[in-house]
Amino acid sequence: MKRKIVLATRNEGKVRELNALLAGSGIEAVGLANFPDIGEVEENGTTFEENALLKAREVAKLTGLPCLADDSGISADALGGGPGVFSARYGDDWDKIKGETRDQRNTRKLLSETRDAGERGCRYITVMAAALPDGEAITTRGEWAGSLLREPRGTNGFGYDPVFLDPELNKTAAELSPREKNERSHRGKATRAMLEKLPAFLARAEKT
Figure 1 (cartoon, one colour):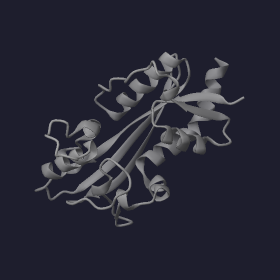
Figure 2 (figure 1 turned 120 degrees about the vertical axis):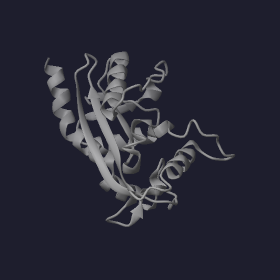
Figure 3 (figure 1 turned 135 degrees about the vertical axis):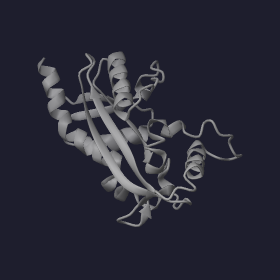
Figure 4 (figure 1 turned 180 degrees about the horizontal axis):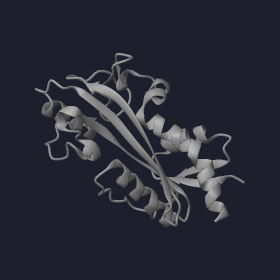
């Protein structure tokens, strides 16, 4: 029988991706679509680690199952590491242009705030947390170093991908295929590190 773990997302595409990575591990992931009574968990932490742990522990407590959660964002050197944990809602205080998505508004603000900056270094960061219903948890971290373009390039991906340039490939994250992006990305690194720890973490929990 497979051990179940909850992935703290309602995005079934992310659930399928994780289950593909879990193939052969004896672990099966289910998403929050299976738990319609669970609302949004407030992410009021000041670091990626705090937010990932908040989500993982709260969902594990509410479901009674181990939970995986992550928090991600972009850190620009010109902004002293910002927008960081505020990446997903960075542009919410700006007026929306007709037809503009939230991601596009966030990117528009980031480019405006860094327009005159000579320093273009940036990095994507993901922290993934696994938690048990009793609150015990582990985390992994992945980073992807890049530079910030002044104009978007590419149509793949999401978030700030069109302005995040991978210097080694000379492509933005939005110009990479899903496979290429997963091999290099912050999220891919954090996920692979977590999958190395997860079986032993769950097995240890079952013995207690």
